[in-house]
Length: 481
Image 1 (tube, rainbow, N blue to C red):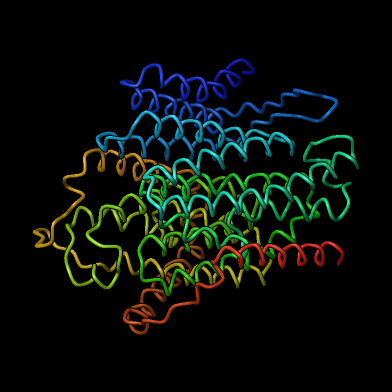
Image 2: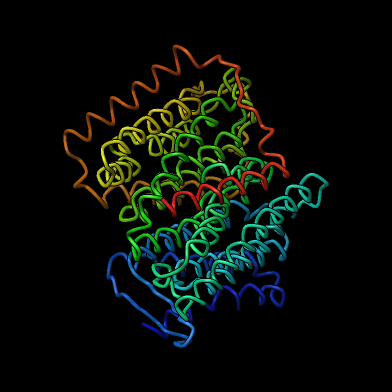
């Protein structure tokens, strides 16, 4: 088990740099690496074999693999494999595939780390690889968006590193467990870094512009898996130090409401999906016991929707409502949209039911409201006009690799529906149907033609740094209270 895990975690980096030696095999090698992560993640879920590997005992540098890791690793493998298929005939260079696989390996590293310094190194590599992928088109716009992302990320990780040093000073270890005995400022600094990286609450408002302006496959990677690297350490810390859970749940509830508010009012497809990512990350963080399954269902659905959004004739919902798309593409849109909305018979229903079950009544009420908002937001996709013979050009038909990628994601999403059949209780089913139906009704009657937008000034770079300061003050206040 130890040897296999070591080989698996090193493989993406060896293959990533090896792609330059074998550029003609770049796509095949990248897909093979993603496939190994799918296999490893499935193994951890079907035949759990918990592993704790101490690398530097004196410093608490530790690797931990369990079923929670398995869910996140499987998500990373499936989304990366789908993106590789999507890009198969896109003419991407060996440089693109190298960065994608290095990103893939670094994301996997976060999901098996149980100490702050290893997570720091992995997150910094992720930032660099993500920056290179965002700026891959080399346009002025992409370079600015990439630099903006890198600056916000590095600022957040500076606070995180200070917190990690303070944890070591207090416990003589970088292990997550040392957070329980760490001073208040250590917890605040570490959580600020992770909340920002994970796109949580106002410190995560860098996410809509970054994810929407990146190329379609990069957007799918960012929203499908990369944001999980900020969430996973928070979930692991909450499981190890339960006293921190109420504070994280407060942020998760606020995040779910903030993100869905932007998603409901957004008229741009990719910005709507990016805003929805913020909201859904609030659900992932709300209940650590269900975080792995929720991250899987969200990652698969969101990656599929980003790939589909990149193949639609327009990014404007009002323009899309004035033309038709094919029934096949309409079905491909409906499945992940219904899943994220929490409709029964789809994996997202089970994930939402598990999450709400672990919340206190006041939090459950607020998250149910957020679920209603999610149903409203995704009505914009579900109710797009379609028919068998389309007048408008169906760009997805001519996109090589598109349907292969969609089949991987939707197929996995359908299979995942059977993982938690115990959630199919009459009360849960009725509640979900009523919530989604009410969301559809509100959209059709009141919001379909609404032109109101929330202000975007807070997304400016200087304001993003400012709100990080406000989040830090809030963290100190909550910890001292």
